[in-house]
Structure formats: C-alpha cells, structure tokens
Length: 361
Image (cartoon, rainbow, N blue to C red):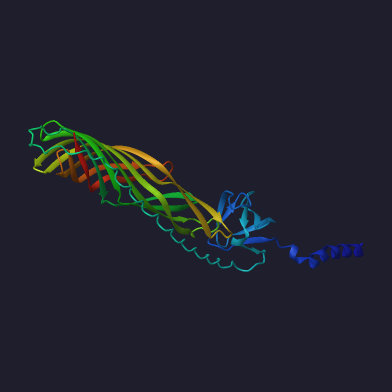
C-alpha cells in the first residue's frame, strides 16, 4: 500500500514539472491610452466598451488579428492585436503606451475652376432714323425697348461648420465659400405716361461662379484622440439668378441727351449649386489615410427684393439711343441642403454698371 501511494503522487507531479507554462493563463494588456472593445472581429463592429492603458483581460481565443477576451461578469468582446500585448499571470509591470502614429499630410488643393466667359450681348436690329424731334412737330415716341449688359462688382465669402459623431468622438467639418463677380443681361419694355413719367417691366439674368474649400477632422477607428485631418476643394459651383422687376421711371431730355431714374420691387428666382453632403471612407491599415467625398446639387430659392438705378442716354436719332446704366439689385437667399449641412445665406443681385441700346416706337 505504501509503495502504491508513492507511485500515484509521482505520477501527479510529473505533468506539472514537464509542462509548467500551462499553469499560467494567457492574458492581454492594453498598451495605448484608450482602446475600443467591439462585439465582433471587425473595424466596423459596434464598440461595447473602452479600456484604459494597463487594463488586463483574460484571452478566451485568438481569431486572426483579434483576441476574444472576457469582461467583468460573463461578458465577452473582441480587441485588436495592435493595441495590446500578451502577458501571463507572472508578467512584469504594465508596459508604457505605444507612441501615436504621425498624422497624415493634408492633400494638395485642386486648381480652381476657370471663370466662365460671359456671352456677348444679343444683336439689335437698327431701324432707319426718322427726322429729329421738333423738325416736323411730331410727338415724342411713348413706347421703348431697352437692352443692356452689366458687370457686377460684388464678391462675398461665407464660412459654414458642422459636427458629426464618428467612433464615439466628434468629427468636425468646415465649408468656406467665395461668391465671385458676374455679369448680367438685362431687357425691359417701357411706356411713357407723360414726357417725364413712365413705367417699365423687365428681367435680368445673372450667372456667378463660386469656389469652395472643405476642411475636416475625423477620429481614428483604433486610437481615440488622434483625428485625421485634410482639405479638399470643390469645383463647378455656381449661383444663377433671374430677376423680374416693375419700375417707376422719371426721365428728363436735354437735346440729344436724356437722364432716367428708376426703381421698384423685384422678384428674384435664384438657383445655387452647393455642397449637399460629405462622406468619408477608411483606406489601408492602420487607417491613417482617409478618403473624403463631397456631393454637390442645385438648390433653388425665390425671394422678393428691390431694383433701383440711373441711366444716361445719348440719342443718335429720334428713335435710337446708346445708354450707360448703373443699378443696384438687392435680395437675400438662404440655400438649405437636406441633412445636417447648415444653410448658405447669399446676397443676391448687387451693384452693376454697364451699357446697351434703347429703341423708341
């Protein structure tokens, strides 16, 4: 009996002496400031918990680049191998956190879109001039048609910003718009109720280019507090207007010269091609680079404003004149895309100076 007991004790001790490493359970320790624990072995899986540097978790099994670890109680979660190190119960003190990866360089801006060349003014058919007023006692014509082209002198800059929640952190976006100068074609039909008082109805068409720059700062999927930043420039953005106006006109005639003052309400139909959405995509492990895409679309807005100005006419005949025109058209348009991007408020119309032709009938 005594020999049998000794033999059993020896057989129980031998496996422990031959395989001492099996006594210690494999564990992992967090080596970054904050690590994400997810509900699946994938970067897009939901984050169920975060862990600070030095936190230790028992390993249930290893799946590719992921460890399935046990949480307090009966919970389980996956953690990526790049944010932990393997330790055993006999391991030394926690290691220092890994140094953060360098931030990516901002992409080079794209060249700005070339400014559109304004089309030439439509041709006007000249009619033979009748004898000058007063030579035969004929009355002055009451109906007239005016055609002219004006150059705009107003530029405008706007900055918009908005935030989104990405990987349990805040992603920041900024949109910088610049509205360029632009020309306008203008035409009107008027009728003089008396030698000095009249009314006209007309329309003007304006097209202006816009430049835009997007800056963004998006959190990293693996490391908290290390956002990726960049800048991209948009192209093909434009503001178009069709302004309909009804003016009261006051005119004075001095031999071959005429001066007109006018003003009245204006209905402005505006359309702006602006950024309506921004999307980002992760590329290349360890996801230090980020692809950003912005979508643009046409947003329309109708507003009421006013139109006022003055014109100098030089009569080359009884029914034909060359004119110089200065006018100011005022209105405000707030263009709101769908989603979380804020509205873009732009000043419509503006100050214009140009010239054209006037025909009287």
